[in-house]
Amino acid sequence: MKRIAPHTLFFLLISVLYGVPLLLTLFFDINSEMPYVEKIILASYKETRFSVLWIYIISVTAFLFGSGLVNSWLGQKIKHYNIPLAVNPIKRSGLTLSQRLLIYVFVALGCALVIQMYLAGAFSDYMKSFEASWVAHNMYTVLCEFFFFFFVYLWINYNGYKKIKAVLLILIFLTVLKGSRMFVVPLLFLVIYKYIYIDKRTISKIVRKMLLLGVLAIGGFFFMFFHRHGTSLSGKEIAPFLFLLVQFEACGVHIPLMKEILLGWHTQFAPMVTLISDTILFLVPRFIWGNKNDYLYFENQIRNYDLSPFGGMNGEASAIIYFGVLYPLAFFIIGAACAYIYKLLQTRKYAWIKPLYVYMCCSLMFTFLRNGVLNASKNMVTILILFLVLELAKRIIIRPTKNTL
Image (cartoon, rainbow, N blue to C red; front, top):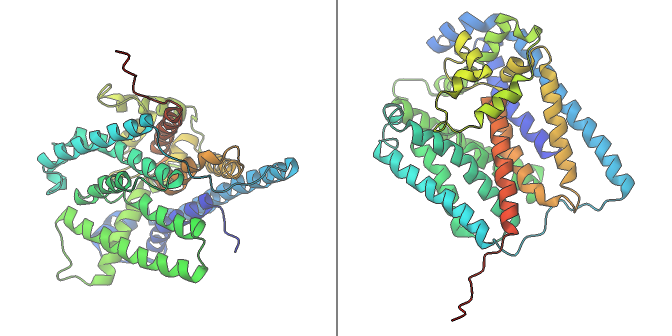
């Protein structure tokens, strides 16, 4: 059975999961009697519904066009030079001591931050303890990306190391206990990736597994919402209220996009070079430069126009901030870049980059479409550096010195 490329699947999947609830709300007034929907979404942004729909159509089309164009061009080139395909890299014999030390250092740092957050009360009252554990929370957020990539790296390249893989999973799942569910989503996507592209199961089995996984995931996310906000289902109709939670997430991250439409930014030009300068500044750790946000073009736009009152910044909104009317170019470039890497990893020469590609599909795509291009750019750079350091550490062999006495 022919399957679409993983990056295309996850781009479409995430776009549907976030875009459809918003469009249903704007076009069909679902849950219009709820104060959040009536007073915030429909009252302020209902007139943007057709613009939102067209922006989604154009963005998805640009992504697919960029991906398809590069896929066709590079596919013909590979065929022309008769380069053998090797979709799955050969499992390696084992981590070097240098690689193990690198992973263990980050795991130890993660454990120390968990203890610090626990003492601040982050696992019992997320909202009240957030300020007290703000520094530890931010550092742990960055490390969760590292933990996920370490897991992918080990899962793709090595058969063993079950204990360290389990520790990495535990460190990621601990974020659920402190009220955050976003770091678990890439793991769910990784399971989907495994079902479709590794196990290569039939459509019926994939659908059954995805439905079961989806029900469990949604149930878990709803539980976390109740735990985080101290609410319950008592006295409420279950179906409308559960969909309201979906609306709260989907509509909240689209408020910046709808505000930009009202401001007319999607029809104006924007200084695209600010994406480069913002990415460079954003890479500077906060403990080195605590007020770096004051110099970020992205943050200043959000602050000056109150673009994101509920947090979150979807990919289309962030692309418009940096590209303006040329936002389709951002999606074209992303689609083309993903397709280029996808084709390269199918050759024996570049099969070793597969962990990076799987990370891009399961985590980076989600970060971009939910939290925006700046967060995705920062994560891409940091994970690329981490990946190269791991590969360099593989070549550094540490041996005990012989006692010559």
